[in-house]
Every structure is written in structure tokens, then in C-alpha cells.
Length: 159
Image 1 (cartoon, rainbow, N blue to C red):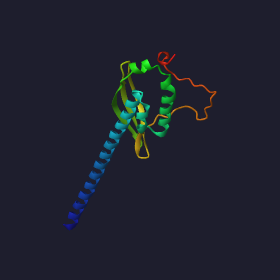
Image 2: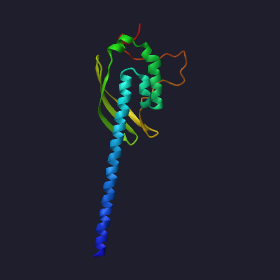
Image 3: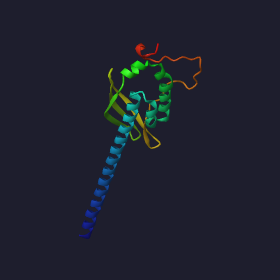
Image 4: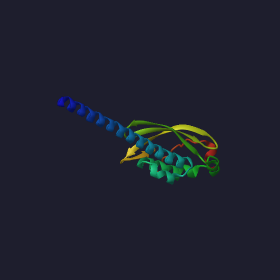
């Protein structure tokens, strides 16, 4: 009889341990999802309203280079009346797809007075913190005699 009691007690400990592991992993996953949503929303809300400096805390180091390009090159070329007409932007996070423990795809909707856009961005864990990762695709060995074509509607470029 004592062996049977010991066996049942051991099963209870194993079951409790498994339950604790499952509960902990669900809480961790939920925390990650909340942090991913906060990061994506902060970045998208800032960039959607042309506020590149406010987006920086939510951006990976590579994405910060993209923000610099937006701030220094694209936004100065954009007609200010277009920016005024295209704000404010309202961002809705539609869903989050965790691709692994360090990466997620965030699907969102951006609504402005001029258009509605459904798109996605990637959020990655960088040094333990979730950050938007949108690397700029321009070669680092750029020289002043190279030109780049930036796709944009002609009506938004300053004349």
C-alpha cells in the first residue's frame, strides 16, 4: 500500500509540474504578443503620421537606417500638402503571427483621409526587446554619382 501511495503522489507532482510549465509558457507567449503589438503599433502610428523620430524606439538598428532615409531623403521630397491631406493615420493591428520565438509578422490596416492600406511588417527580438525590422535595401558603398529611383506617385513629389 505505501508503494501505491508513493506512485500516486509522484503522478500528482509530475502533473502539477507539467501544468505549471504549460501555464508559464502561455503567459510568456501572451506577454510577447502584447509587446509585439505595442512595438508594431508605436512604429506604424509614428511613421504613418510622418514622425520618424517617434518611431526610433520601436526600430531595429537596420530599421533606424531606413528611418534616416525617410527623414533625410523621402519626406523632404514629398509635397507638404500631400502630407497634410494624408494625416492623421489610424492604425489597427489585425493579427500577429509568431513565426518562431524571435520573430513575428504583424498584419495591420492603416486608414488615412486619402486611402486604406492592408499590409504586414516583421517584428524581431533584438537583445531581448521586440523591434520592427525593415532594412533599407541600398548598397552601403553608395557614391555621390549613383542615383536611385524611388517609386512614388508623381503628385506627391515637390515640383
